[in-house]
Length: 398
Image (cartoon, rainbow, N blue to C red; front, side):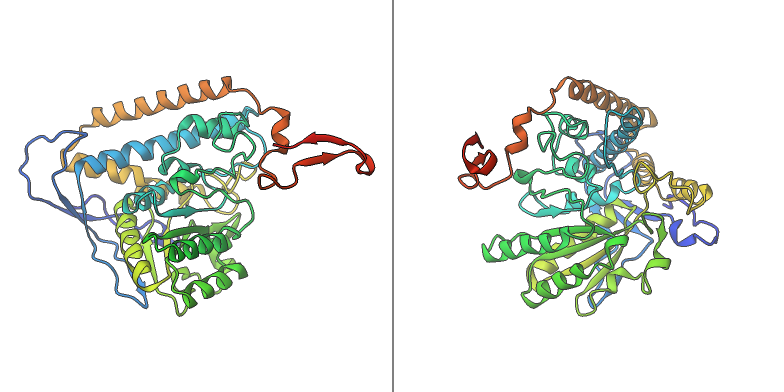
């Protein structure tokens, strides 16, 4: 059953390729539960994986009604949260840098569906939705964005420095590309400890030309580390189109001696399949690169209107043809797993949850000034703060 038709050829046709999926199910046409059905469903994407130095995984993806409804709900939650963050920033309740993820939700959702919390994820500064995917709460998100104590980094990190170590989420990093060597370091620890888990290091196409990426990748390949480098290619590094910044924009091939896979990053099920394949490969053979072909609707950051270096027609075309949430909506409706009303009810619930979380976050106090001295030194080191000429102890740090 085709879910959408191919876009007409335009200068941006590569951005507008829709998902055409043939769906088969062993079940009859009876009405299934919107939330608990675990009947296997197979979906075959018409956009194939493109492989470099490896065999592409099967295009047939297995899922369930329960998983698809979960995808829809969490992506709707992510989308609503990012739109709310945009409004809070314009109201000056969020300060500093803020980079929104709307449009790219399928990457966070699909990746999470293929792994466990033992696996590690580390990313750049567009990190709100990845944090939610790892199990973070809306209260933690909005509190951190507004610099409140209830934030995931106690209000001291802000938009770019979300963190959830207990769920294997290591940030949230503001320096372009610097998270990649750290991700390879996490993979080194996993191999050293024989954890049988992997690390995903996410970066954008704008960071793909960073030298530290290639240095880290070389070490990962030398030592066969379970590192998966994920290039979230949204086609613009800040305001620079990929073709203006990269001689070879085939980022999945950039590893040369390291295998790679190009994935439709607007299709949550394709991302799930690719990440499952990559995890199995990394545990057996070492590093692999995944290039997620995705798109961001907002500008690079809040100071970027996002329309000076690309046309509004391009943005609306991607929304109409490739939006990850609409794809799942169409799939649920075509399989009779949900009605339009049920899906709209989910979106209403999500809006209410976001509004309630924002109200709670506003009630959370600002960090105490003493927090300036915490999380600076390893406990037991640098614990004394001296006055002039080191003659008196002014403070003892926690």
